[in-house]
Structures are given as structure tokens and as C-alpha cells.
Length: 517
Image (cartoon, rainbow, N blue to C red; front, side, top):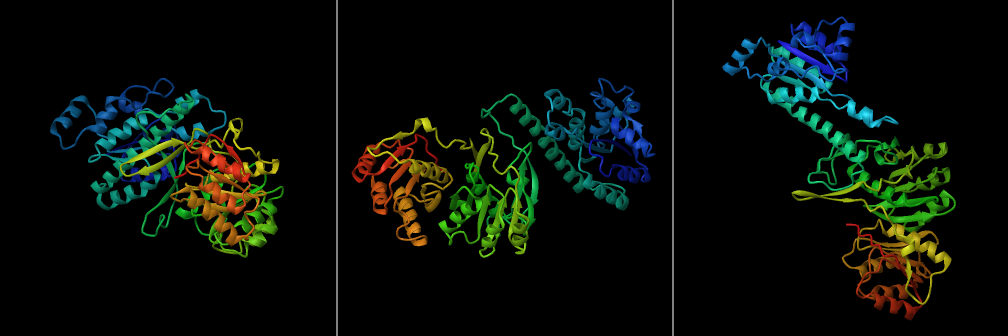
């Protein structure tokens, strides 16, 4: 029996080859793998000794030869195939051990050129893998060093690799090569600055972790990361304390981080079930935290807290007294980290570059039954040049700041969404209602219940989409709202504007809606 071995990842390859030699299996090898085996005293044939043709073109052509591929692809039970091999003086190859040029490692390097990336596109490797996988019943094909022990174990016990294992190894080939090809296609698309949606969509991700369960205990789940350079993403966070992140932890924390990235000033976002429940901004991060916390002391229980400045000891002292699932900050005061890590179950994450936004051409994807809907992310908030003050009363300077703050929040509230804010603090959030008046009433009710009867007096209101009726304005007036920001675009815009004028409420239209489903 013979094995053809050509690997970029040389983990465990020396030990594996020694086991093959002990089993009287001849080794054929190429390039750097051959030199590595030779340096370790492992005898192997160079592939050129098998093909009778030298490696050429700086190693671009090594294994692309009939004596290699005929030896792999010949069906051993096919008499005609075996007769042809005999006439052509071709010997069979029974094991193909190949993993591919380090394309990912190449494109991850700083300053890599397109020429370097293209040179690291493997040609012969995928060809051998596909040949061996196609003939899996006769050839054991290995792409993953973690499978070496399994193959050796079966060879020692039964002098062959079982058909079940060969079929498993075949499947891994196409997982390996499809991932490799998808990385290349994605790189080239980005190199061309191609933001179009093509006729097909092939995505590839790498597993970060298995999960105990998904959204509910009866669902399976895993966490995957996108391939490529990224900063400020949850996949890059360092966990200092607590159990592994759950499906819901990751989903909710990601939503909180998306909102946090809207702010340059010190900001804290508390999130529950994918919706913000308390948001605060201030000149000092501890003050921002206290605004976010006092906005909704009830919903924050079992929630997520993220902040964009160093988390202080004073914040940690407060947080010790409430049950939180996840805390994320770019860094921690030592005393703060010590306090938070006392509780064994709280997940304490450090995420450098927490402020870095997603690329504007990133994709938002939702699985539907039988398909996938894909869009670019909602990377804009509004264009201030498009703002229109449509009422007789214009918002005061401090109200304008709160209108901007409220619009940032409501962009990340499930539709229909309303956010009521005052002085850099969310005081009432109405998420995910089937009509807008219910969302508005819910935000007022929560503010009054959680903060006080006067909480909404003098506050401003932000809506993710237009008002189809003037009922929201009427409810806002009853709650003491003094300014409203919304996209506009309803056929009934004027009715809402007239109502605002009747009550002396300032209204701004942005011209940009933010549905979030």
C-alpha cells in the first residue's frame, strides 16, 4: 500500500508517518512535506520519482499528473481499470493525506498583496482531495490531523480502514474544500469592491464553540465566526469569568453592542431579550451606568450590560447587587474585575475596540423556511441635512440632543418601537407591538411605573417609523412630551403635524425609517 502525503499543517504528521512505515505502507511526498520527513529520518519517495516528471514552475506543478490521479481514481473492483493501470505501469495510491495552502493565514497578514494571496491558492491539493474522495471506497483521504489516530487504530486492528470511516473522511473533504473555495471567492469579491447580490450565495464560517443548547433547551446550537479580519466583534471578546456564553447570551449581547456602537460619548446599554431596557449617556461612564440602571431597575434583572469606557469599581459595586447574565467593557479597573469575578456565574467579557462599527457592506441574514433573506446592515441613522422641523414650535438645543439620542435607541428597538428619553437617559421603551399607539402607551406606562408619575413630563419621543394616525401625538401630549422625532412619510403626516401645533409640541421628520423585525 502507498500513501501520498502533502500537508501545510504538519501537526502530528511525523508520528503518523512513522506509524505508516511500521505498517509497511510506502510514503510518497512533495515539497516542504518531503523535506520535513527527510529531516526526521523518515524514508519517502519524492512525487517526481513516481511521475518521472520534475516539479516545475516554482512548485505550481507537482502532483497534476496521470500517474498520481490514475493511481488514486482507479476502482479496484473494476477489472478494466486495473488492467489499464498495469499497461501504463501505474501503481495504486491507497491513502491521500493533504491539507491546503494557508490561504486564510495569508490574507489575514497585514499588508498582504493580491499577488501573495493568489499565489497561495492551492490547485493540486484540492484536485487530489476530490479525486480521493470520489474513490472513497478504495482510498482513505485525510484532511484533518485529528483523524490520524482513528486511521492508525483501524489499520492496526483490521489491516484496513472501514467503509464507514472512509465515507466520513470523504464528507470532511468536501467540507474542507468548500470552505477553502468560499474563502477565496469572498476575498476576490472584496478585492473587486463588489457589493452586489450575485446569482448564488455561498457563505463560510468557522466554529467558535459548541453550545449546551439553543434558544430553548430542546434545540441544538453552535457559535460560528466569520473568516477575515475583524475588530470590535463579540467573537474577539476575552472572557474573564462565568459559564460559557449561551445562544441567548450571544444574541442579546450582540444587539446591545450594536446600539452601543452608535455612541462616541461615555455610554451604557442594558439589554433584555434583544431589546434595550435602559440606556444612559454622560460625561462620566459611572454616571452613564447609573442612568441606564435607574431607567428600568426591573427589566435589567437577568440582562446584559455593555459600556464603551473602562468599567469602574463604583459600577462594579452597584452591579454586585443585581443579577446580570453578561457584562462587556473595553477594559476594567482591577478592583472592578475582582469584585465582578466573585460571582461564579456572571460572564465578564473584555472587548477591545468595542467602538468599531460593522463594515457598511456587512450582511444581515434571516433564515426562512426553505431559504434565506439577505440585506446590507442598517448602517445609517439619518442624514441631519434631511431633517425637517415641520411644526410651528422648533425643538430647543437640549431637546435636539435628546432627539438624536432617542433616535439612536429606537433604531435598535423591535418594531413597532417607541423610545422616550430625557437628559441623556431612556425613561420608557415600547418594543415589538403590533400597532404604534400600543408601543407609545407602553413606553409611557413603564416610565410612570418604574421612575415616577412625572417621568415623561418635558421628555422627547422617538419612533422607528411614521405615524399613520394622530393618536400617538395625543397620547404624547397627555404624557407631557415636548418634542417628537419620526421618519415621516405617511399620507396622514399633516394630521400629526396639526396635532403637534395644537399642543405646542415640536416635531422633526428625518426621512429615514428603521424597521427592526
